[in-house]
Length: 226
Ligand code: SAH
Ligand code: DHB
Ligand code: MG
Image 1 (cartoon, rainbow, N blue to C red):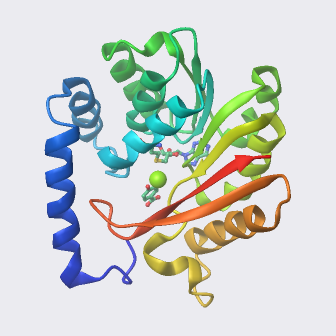
Image 2: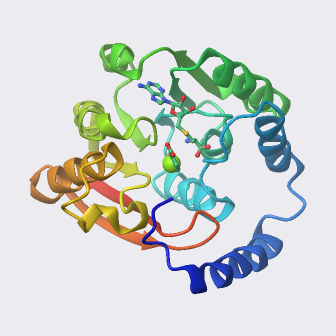
């Protein structure tokens, strides 16, 4: 995480997330098992936070989503929340480059009882974008993979969306690097590319929520398709 994270405040964000998770996410063994499997496989600790995972579920439920697309599966933590939020005959199509990540996610999602709702497309997500045409209309897309391709994934999501579909992009603030124009690493440029695209694109109405918490200072872009 970036240096822009404020050191003397971050402990408070963590305490608040501890409290919120004790209220909202305690006793969910499937959820804990997904994170434990991920840790056990030495995968990076970069899943969305429990409270942000709940936001994804709430967004999916609030539009009655049945078809969800995700870019970036990791161990299936965000996938679990999206799969739970859709109807029994709904489907999450999630993209993962790393076969090992996909294997861990598959095992965890099966164990959580939502495996039948999830298709994992393994490989470079860019190569699997053409296949999404057959899955349209897509109700919600969650973009959380390699940041350099954020704008491409956003365009791909738009191409298969319908009016009222949602497109959510993780990590677009990245400790404030979004607005630090001197920062030209792939997180900053990938974030700026998709934020500037969503801001000017007449096909969507979008906002960015800055967030703090267990994952420090970051933010999500949320767009609805007009
Ligand atoms: N959405 C997950 C976290 C995803 S982390 C959650 O919140 O639980 C990002 C994932 O994207 C990693 O597993 C990484 O392997 C994958 N990834 C990175 N580049 C990719 C690409 N080009 N195509 C597909 N997956 C990619
Ligand atoms: C990274 C990726 C993420 O999706 C995230 O939420 C946090 C960090 C990363 O690549 O470092
Ligand atoms: Mg992320």
